[in-house]
Image 1 (cartoon, rainbow over the protein chains, first blue to last red):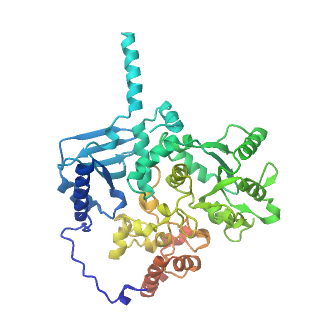
Image 2: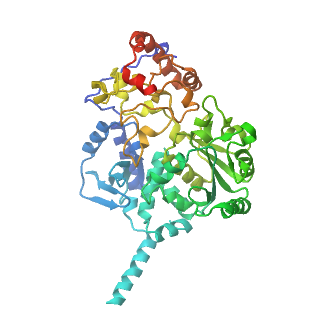
Image 3: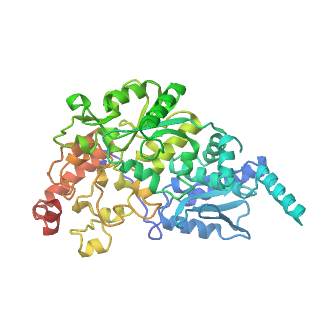
Amino acid sequence: MSLEAIPIHVITHAPSEPGLSGNAPPLLREISELLQRLLDSGESAAIDLSALPLTPADLDWLQAILGAGEIAITLQASGESTLSETACPGVWWVTHRNENGAVTSQFIEVAFIPELAKAHPLDVAIGREQLELLISDL
Amino acid sequence: MQGPLIDTLVRQGVSRRTFLKYCATLASMMALPPTAGRAMAEAMAASRRPSVIWLPFQECTGCTESITRSHSPTIEGMIFDMISLDYQETLMAAAGFQAEEALHNAMKDNFGKYLLIIDGSIPLGVDGAYSCIAGRSNLDLLKDAAKGAAAIVAMGSCASYGGIPKANPNPTGAVSVSDIIKDKPIVNIPGCPPIPVVMTGVLAHYLTFGSLPELDDKGRPKAFYGETIHDRCYRRPFYDQGKFAKTFDDEGARNGWCLFELGCKGPVTYNACATTKWNGGTSWPVESGHGCLGCSEPDFWDAGSFYKALSTPANPLKLAATATVVGAAAGVAVSFANRAKKDAAKKAHQPVTLADLEK
């Protein structure tokens, strides 16, 4: 069936800039809602950017609007990941890369601290054991 | 996050953060909600390694190569630490009697619970004599192994649809796994070879949820085979603008324009190459300048020339059938047909380079 058969005509506004799909601005509302939820209940959330129909220009636009914040965390785990706080505290731009430096996934995480930055209690326990070993060797 | 699996990984030097990152990426690729990454990590960390039996039939070992060679040592390889691979001829150290014994023990000890992976088609001609292991035909082995399987994964186009062995004139009478086994859940992971992350994604789903992921009408996981190569192709804007490469070395080819007129089968091929890419995200066929062959579609080998545009009536039988089965693709096919009329004169002319390629 061709689209002409549907008696409704969609008027598409020309995007203001080339490459912009218009899909990015609604995300800001969602982020705002998620921030309110974080404040009310302490519940963190994430938006999977690779799952949304966003063009590279959309992502640039979103990144520019959200701005750069005070903290940027670099994680070296099978390739580099960056977890950067945006100018809006509590909103983190998380980019995972593989060993070749290619982006494997991208998220906006709404949290006081991103999940990955926290140390796991079991890892802390292992670390302390190793520290005790070092101390006993002194 | 604790349990037998993560303990094993930590001992091998894989940190919890690496594992979490891996699960987040995997969940994203499987189109699961972002929170699923965390849930997957928790569930998989605590999971007991399921027994996996991998039987190679009429195949070229390309599927095994794809899975085992394209990953970095830790990431895709991690999945091999999450399963107990009890039989895999190419990878196992055991041979002969010991290998067959391992297979029989795994089948007996885990009856009803093991995951059966099949790569290669099953030849039915001459009572299955074209492909035998330890004196038994593939057909016999498959029926026997399927009895105790919780689920079957058909790896690659041969196991999924018959693949190249089934291509005209199909001398061995090759058929797919689903042509023979009717009473078990089967997931098809077609591709020649299939994309490694699709395989690991299906295994991760099985480990996390204890079931196979959602499948489409051809038995493929929707998360990876939900859209065509064409719909996710980074050259798609050129198609929409009508900018096509006409030969492999013209200005259009150099400018990276759409390869549709050079026979790209992207518009009728459902796979994830355009998003996951190949060789650790390095590139994929269209990015390297060659059209999609449609290797993950049934009977791709007999669907006409790889170098004739889809709209030319080279042999549109299979591709047209594919398009009508899938509603969304039907509209695409119609617009191709229109293009064909308009460009008929142009299409009659075949550049020498293409003719050479077909020889």
